[in-house]
Image 1 (spheres, rainbow, N blue to C red):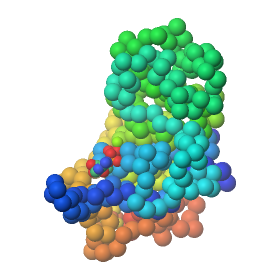
Image 2 (image 1 turned 180 degrees about the vertical axis):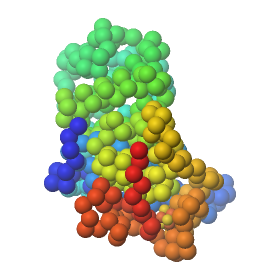
Image 3 (image 1 turned 90 degrees about the horizontal axis):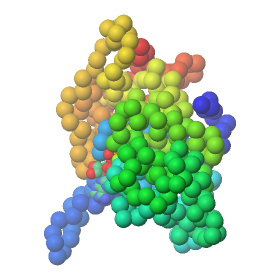
Length: 345
Ligand SMILES: Nc1ncnc2c1ncn2[C@@H]1O[C@H](COP(=O)(O)OP(=O)(O)O)[C@@H](O)[C@H]1O
Ligand code: SF4
Ligand SMILES: [Mg+2]
């Protein structure tokens, strides 16, 4: 894994990204009565060649971010710059050209592949939309190459999805994601539906492909332990916001946001000695509704450190004042007024 570096070129720059879904009432006269604040003002960069892990509990807005990056939906506000160009305003041919370079791998390899199509047609389908990538007569050979690249027998090209295991189906999904030779792959919980033993194989394959095809990954998961292995940097989401982001050692070994600390304390530790020395933080209560999020810091209803200020002001995602100018791994962006370094054994 390459070391993250501020000097590296940002291939995607996300600025002030917001996605609200209107809540409506009435059947004939639909009236907007509120909004689900699925994503509420997030900023991050994706550097060329890196893997950025995005983690957070179900419902915090991860898939919405993925759909916005893929231009499958338009944001309510904010910008997504791909190589410096705002892609949220594009349409027609220009949008199609950008979409070719940003591809997605989906969570569920059981439902994301059309059961009535052969593997060859599934992997080659993107060529129908972008015939310029591979001439028609060469498609079969290209699809067979892709099967080989993801570790499947090229002779399986005429088989159907049900003839494959979950891990193999996810390999088919990855082959399809690679068909157009994209630069960026957004993988939305690509291994969450797989057995633990198969998860590692698929992650190893994705790492190998990253080097081979010089890919930048955004790797979404709800579990911090899954993204650790593959990520150069990690961003933690809570209720539509990024609450902490930094290099993998910064986040895993020196988390400063209470939410990240709680998530990490729940990750099983294999070493019993380390386990004994670690306090488990139990979060109380449910995640509040994104249609009616708490004022100030959105985590405050579950935070054991919350004080009055947390209800009145929104903590910015920035290096907390206590760590500014210090050279410690705790000096990374964290949206908490009372951030503390909690070394994670
Ligand atoms: N099309 C939609 N219409 C209304 N609400 C939506 C829509 N898509 C997602 N949401 C809501 O937005 C929030 C974030 O969802 P999602 O991005 O799927 O979270 P995650 O992927 O982290 O589980 C959830 O409360 C979800 O119910
Ligand atoms: S800003 Fe306040 S409520 Fe939010 S995480 Fe920090 S201490 Fe907790
Ligand atoms: Mg999701």
